[in-house]
Amino acid sequence: MATRYIALKTPTPGGLLAWLLLFGCTFALAWSSASLGEEAHANGFDVGGALVPQDEILEGGPPRDGIPALTTPRFVAAADATFLRADDSVLGVSLRGVTKAYPVRILNWHEIINDEIAGEPVAVSFCPLCGTGAAFYAQVRGRRLTFGVSGLLYNSNLLLYDKETLSLWSQLMNKAISGSLKGTQLESLPVTQTTWKSWRQAHPDTLVLSDRTGYRRDYASNPYADYMTSAMLMFRVSKESHRFQPKEWVLGVAANGEYKAYPFSELARAGAVVHDHVGGQLLEIRFDPVARSAQAFSAGKPYPGQMAYWFAWFAFHPNTEVFQVSRPAAK
Image (cartoon, rainbow, N blue to C red; front, side):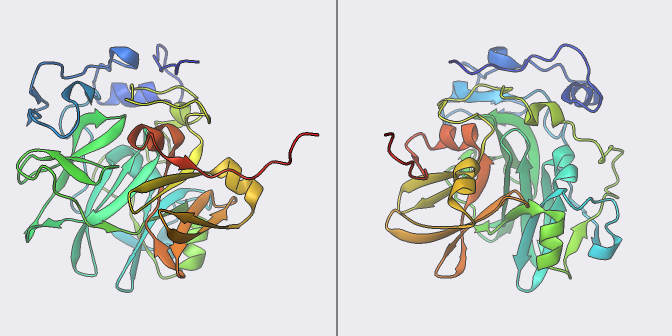
């Protein structure tokens, strides 16, 4: 069965269309989403010679910086983060004894936070369309970079850009796909995607990104609420699999050139801890169904993993293995 794509026609309270209208953008949703085709420029970026097919780079609707990244984020102590609910999703980052939580309810509206942790320039990003959170050092070749939202997508995934060189960066590839930094890999930081309650219990001294951002946004509402609960996508992707519902949560891991996805539905059957090998690497997968979170560990230490919607992980890794609990043979 072919994937269906959302084409919103009427507003729904707190729904995605209200967000589109807020930015004054006319979106070409579904298969009519605007690709760059023969043109080598979009939103002010030169994508000629990009590392990905040019006709698969789509204009998402907002212009460059139409979704404003945060560059001077404020933080509060956990006790003062009264705007958060226990079950709110956060991206948690720890570096050199400093821990910070970035609420998804804020990231939904800004997608990128340019920040410093323990004196290191970092950028934290979240792609609402793919459910993917990532953090990385924001310094390349000795130069600090400031990232913004390009308004372009590849495989429905956020393309960041740096303001210094206008290179485009794929969030899920963790790499520059065009511009003078094309091919450069970003150095990732471990990210924990979990609930505020779970993160706070594990890190009571955490700092929290404040909702006092300087922008007038209704952070109590989720502009992607309809999208998250629908099986439909907004933008086409290069590879599709209908093995799972498109927005089934998975934990994706990579080791020695091999990829494996751990669907939450399978982890729920397996229990709290799974021991497995990927690319010859012994991994321990820890799953918390209450916190809606999964993490990978190797030799007791956090191992890079990526929580994502199934469709997004598969689009970037179509040769992925998939973890599945053994079923009893039919009698």
